[in-house]
Structures are given as C-alpha cells and as structure tokens.
Length: 207
Ligand SMILES: Cc1cc2nc3c(=O)[nH]c(=O)nc-3n(C[C@H](O)[C@H](O)[C@H](O)COP(=O)(O)O)c2cc1C
Image (spheres, rainbow, N blue to C red):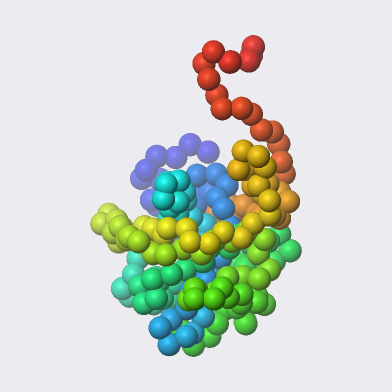
C-alpha cells in the first residue's frame, strides 16, 4: 500500500478512521469512569490515554469534538472535576468495546455492559472493580486543539490501584491482564518480551 494525502482523503470515512487509528501502533485500552453532578455514573472506552509527566503525575486523553454530539465523559469531568482510568482486563474486552455505544445520558454503561462500580471514600468518580490497574485523577487542565475541535483533558493522579510493581517501579502489564487496541475495533493481549537497563552510550551492547 502506498497512498498520498489525496488518496487517503478519498477513502471511505470508516476506512479512513480505522487507518489513522492503526497508524500509531498499539494504544492502551482504558475505561474512563465518571459521574454527573446529579449522580449518574458513566463509563466509556478510550484509546488515547497518554502519560504527560511524573512530578506531578499527569495523564491525559483526547476527547472527540464537543458541541453537536453529547460527550458524557467530558461533561461529567467538567461538572465534578474528577475521573478514573481503568485498564480493560482481557476477560472483559467485548464488554468494554460496547461502552462506546451512544446510550442515553440516563443509562449507566456500568450496568448495561456488565461492569461493577467501585468507590473510594470522598472521591466522586467510580472505579471499575473488574479492572486490575486503575487510577483516580483530579482534572487540572483542558487544551483545545483548534485544528479539529478535539480536546486534551489532563488529570493529576490522586489514587493508584495496581499489582505490586518491581523494584524499579515497573508494572507488569501482562500480569494485570491489560490489553492493547489497534484501530477502533481490534484488540490484542500483551506478552512480556524484554526489559533493558537505562540506555547509556558507554554501555552499548555489541550489535
Ligand atoms: C476502541 C475505541 C477507542 C476509543 N477511543 C476514544 C478516544 O480516545 N477518545 C474519544 O473521544 N472517543 C473514543 N472512543 C469513542 C468513545 O468510546 C465513544 O464516543 C463513547 O460513546 C464516549 O462516551 P461518552 O459520551 O459517555 O463520553 C473510542 C471507541 C472505541 C471503540
């Protein structure tokens, strides 16, 4: 396949969406849990979660254009100022996928898609009980991307629930049964491959 911008743009919309979502490689599969000011819970799958910094610990995700379409996750975060990010466990991939359906605002994807709410005292966003690696975040910043009216939502980590990390702080994503996403409909299990020391020019192996 060898395509220029014009040929890519001429492709069917669905095909273009899947193509551009596959290009970056494997993305993390996360469920974002929120609650509205009236107490309605919401859960949706997001593949755009990224790490933004370690002091303070910041994570972000991209939300699709707001305005015409109702975006419950975005609205709830603006209302309550908190959200959770929960790794999709490998035995719940199909359930997680269907949280992307446009349910009415009154419908909680926890119930319709078979997930259990888990709460931490004093924290207003629901965690996913079935998830083995999850964080609770306080929303701290929003960046509007003018080019396509998307938004980078940034949160500071307040809570972490995860299996023990190794001495270096690395979490084993295979043992937490975390999964990866390609495109918008394809999921992969993770297999541990290798771990290397911090790369220094003077310690280069002989290739
Ligand atoms: C695999 C997958 C990944 C997705 N990633 C994102 C994403 O990163 N950002 C986003 O805005 N929507 C993403 N979506 C779409 C949302 O899940 C969908 O719009 C959902 O209805 C949002 O729910 P909400 O309105 O309750 O916030 C993704 C959907 C799928 C199936």
